[in-house]
Structure formats: C-alpha cells, structure tokens
Image 1 (spheres, helix red, strand yellow):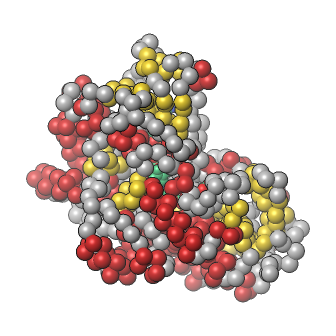
Image 2: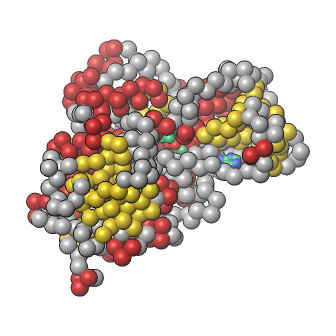
Image 3: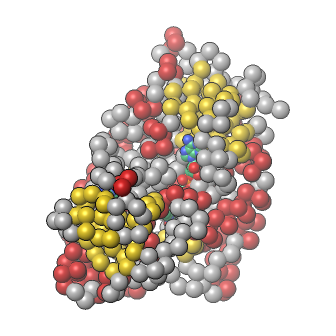
Length: 539
Ligand code: FAD
Ligand code: NA7
C-alpha cells in the first residue's frame, strides 16, 4: 500500500536511535506511509546500542532524557537515579520500539552505502550493503551527530599485541578487571570510562591531550515521591524545556557573573558544584559564562581551585589544570579528579610529550617513556555532525554529492534540509540546535512530518530549500555562534577534533525555544523558502 506510484516505499528512514524511531512512528503510524528503516546496528537504540563501555551514562537528567510525545510512555517511565545508565536507556528504547511496534519496519545489520536522487522518476535510490536497492519518495536520515567514530592513526598500531577498543563501538563481554588499561581521550566519554575503569583495572594510564573542566555529576538516587512529582508535572516540565535554551530541564540563569561580587560568584558556583551537572554549571549559574570572558574566567578559576584542592600531587594537579577557555561541551563526572590520587592511576600529558607510536607491548611517548598495556581504549570521540553524511555516497540533483556540497564545511537549512537534495530530511543535521537532544529531535521530526504531510496534501512531487534560505540560515548560525566564546575553544562542536576537517559552524546556538519559533514560522508562512516541483526551467 505504497502511496507513491512506482516506488518500493514512500519513505526510507536511516537510523534506529531516538531520531529514526520517532520518524518511523510519525510517518508510518500517524500518516499511513509505507516506510522502510535501516540501521547498521543489530537492533534499536542508536548511540545507546553502540556505546556500551563501562560507565556509559547520559548526563541529561532521567526525567527529560526521553520522548515527550506519548503520555503512556511517560507514565510508564522508570528510573532509580538522577541520570540513566546506558543499559537503562537501551531498555527504554526497546520498550518504545515494542510499544509503537517499530521493529517490523526495520532491516538491521544493514548499512546504507549511498542514496541517489533520480530526477526522471523523482525517487531516491537507496543502496545498502546487503545488495538490496530500494526506491522511495522521501529520504529521512537519523544518522546521529555523535556516531561516526574518530579513530586516530598511530604509528605501529598493528604491531600492538593487546586489544584496541573504541568506546563508540564497544563489544559485549570485555573484562577490564586486573588489566593494564590505557585510555586515550578525556572528553565526556573519557571522563566516564576513566572513572569506571580506575577502581577495577590493575593499572590505568590516562593519555590526556587537553586538560578539561569537569564538575561533579551529582548522580543521586531518586525517591518515588520525586519521580511521582515529576510525572505529575510533565505538562509544565516539557513546556519549560521546549521554550528554554539548552532543554536540560532547569531554568537558565538570568544573572550575569560579570557584575556579581566575588562572594556571590563563589556562593553560586559552590552550590552548583554541590548540586552537580555540567550544563547546569555553565548555564544554570550565570547567564554570561558562554559569552563573557570575565564570567568565563570566573567559572574557570573556580574549577581550577577545586582541582588544586582535590588532587594531592601538585605536579599532577598542574597537568590536570586546563589552559584554555571553559567553552567546550560542559563535562561532568563522578569524582573525576579524585581518580588521579589513586596509586594504580598514571596521567600521561601527551600534549607535552606526544604519543610517538604503539609498540608490541604498549605505547611509547616521544620522550622514550613506554607504558605497558593489555588494552587500549580510544575515547577519542566522533567525526561529529556531518561525519556519517560524508561517509555515505549521497547524491542529489545532477549527481551533486553531499561531500562536495559540504567541502568547505557542512551547511544545511534549519538543520534539516539541503539545497539540491529534494525530499531529503535530516534529523540533527548540521546547524540544528545545541541542546539536550531528545526534545530537539522531537521538534525536528514533527516539523519534517508536518512538511511531508503538507506537500502530500498539496500534491507536490518534490520539495527542497532555496539557496538564499539555506545561506541565510547558515549565516544566522555563524552570527549567533560568534556571539559566544565557543568558537574560540578547539572541540568537535566546530570540527576541530578531526585532523584536516574544516573549522565550521555546525550548530544553531540560540536555544531550542528560538529554534522552535524559527521553524514554526517557516511552516506558518506556507513554506515560502522551499521550492516545490523544481524543474530545469525554474533553476
Ligand atoms: P544515534 O542514536 O546516533 O543513531 C544513529 C543511528 O544511525 C546509529 O544506530 C547508526 O548505526 C545508524 N546509521 C548511521 N549511518 C548509517 C548508515 N549509513 N546506514 C545504516 N545505519 C546508519 N545527548 C544528550 O542530549 N544528552 C546526553 O547526556 C548525551 N550523552 C551522550 C553520551 C554518549 C556516549 C554519546 C555518544 C552521545 C550522547 N548524547 C547525549 C548524544 C546522543 O547521540 C543523542 O542524545 C541521541 O541519542 C541521538 O539520537 P539519533 O537518533 O539522532 O542518533
Ligand atoms: P570528545 O569530546 O571529542 O573527546 C575526545 C578526546 O580524545 C579529547 O580529549 C581529545 O583531545 C582526545 N583525542 C582525540 N584524538 C586524539 C589523539 N590523536 N591523541 C590524543 N588524544 C586525542 O569525544 P567524547 O566521545 O568524549 O564526547 C563527544 C560527545 O559524545 C560528548 O560531548 C557527549 O555528548 C557524547 P583534545 O581535547 O582534542 O585535545
């Protein structure tokens, strides 16, 4: 019962994470389209299927790291602590898939190698690694923005006799206990895997390139009364979340640190330190930490003071003290700096003494110092945002490739569409919101589903953004980003973590509330920024 004449499916959805699953639900269950989903993973879960490393956890609080659209799912939600562990999130995703009967639309263990738009038929040809090629009118991609693993190349890596693992592709059954473990990377993931590994490993060596600002996570148990209150108050909670900036479930501060007294700053930072939460520390304490150098220095100095207090060996404390701005994705952890007081933990500063090579027995630094290891864990992050898009052979009108369209850095209209790619919709594509992600994913999937519905009702065959609209959106994102300190710090947010990747703005940083208004306006104005049924003459 495909509506599109001559197509195998009305829509193909790639990905079975939060994004893909909701897209299949909206398009298939609500709009009656014939949908095929693909994921290279063996089951649903996306991020939470792949990232099974010890300590894997969401640092968005449990009550808002979930879908909001289904009251029954909200009512059934279960959690024991303030944050959800990876197994709990995976269980939740499985429950969602069962509840909405989503699995039957998917082919798992199937990678989409490419998708080519055929201008004659007006259909996407979707090519998979199972040898199957299918056609569909719409292509919806939920490929994940932190999903394409970054595996740096090191000399001698093939000679290493031990095991090498990446946190983002973690196999079942790895036992780190009593092993000599090396961890490369101290980002959000590194902090989690380091704190989980230190107590069980025989010895842990952390290879740190950049020292990080890490505040406590504050993962306390949550009693039934608190959970019942959160559930009873969900209408207000989601309303606040969807009109906020970072969508983390707390009110962002309206107080500037710039004008606060030193005592007031100390009081507010200390309270946030005790409360826990990385995004809370950056956005819930004062309103100008991400925009004012003075405020940023105040927050950074507070954390540096804590490092000095916590870490017993002053030389180690110095290595752990960040030298740059507090303007990457804010991190939090469970007694992170305390790890370095343990006898079985060594910190190797690989900015001062870089990794020279892997040897059969471990890692040798440029100074000649060798660390003997049984297992090396790459907590080296992801080719974020556009990584999975440029890996695929995506071709739009006239065979134009996404790789070429984004060769100077990813673009994207509203974080969801691209010029020359008709009937193509991205979930969390470039220049979408920088927030707790499930609420932004829902916002985008709902807009995509509404747009498809409107086009179907109008009888439109194809829809794509104008160059002007796309360029204006990218320009807006650049202007907003430049009002913050984030572009001044080197991180995945601007593509700085991948050697050779062009530094580009990849997020809309004005918050989910403003984002929702911006995309609603496009719909209310009748999608005037989209070209319907573009033909050669109109170009
Ligand atoms: P994903 O969950 O990444 O799913 C994408 C799926 O697409 C994957 O399963 C992948 O296999 C599949 N795929 C990609 N390309 C192809 C292809 N060519 N063919 C077939 N399948 C393909 N966000 C927060 O908001 N709060 C947090 O606390 C938080 N913590 C995180 C912790 C970790 C360790 C990581 C890695 C991410 C975290 N995130 C967090 C971000 C997280 O990715 C999002 O919250 C959310 O899970 C993204 O969902 P998604 O569906 O967009 O993408
Ligand atoms: P991140 O935040 O990109 O962190 C990766 C870490 O790995 C970071 O400390 C990097 O150092 C380090 N790294 C990367 N390449 C190398 C090489 N070649 N040598 C040494 N060290 C290296 O990734 P995460 O997985 O922690 O987090 C990504 C997001 O996923 C996170 O924000 C959550 O939302 C989930 P650097 O800082 O670049 O000097």
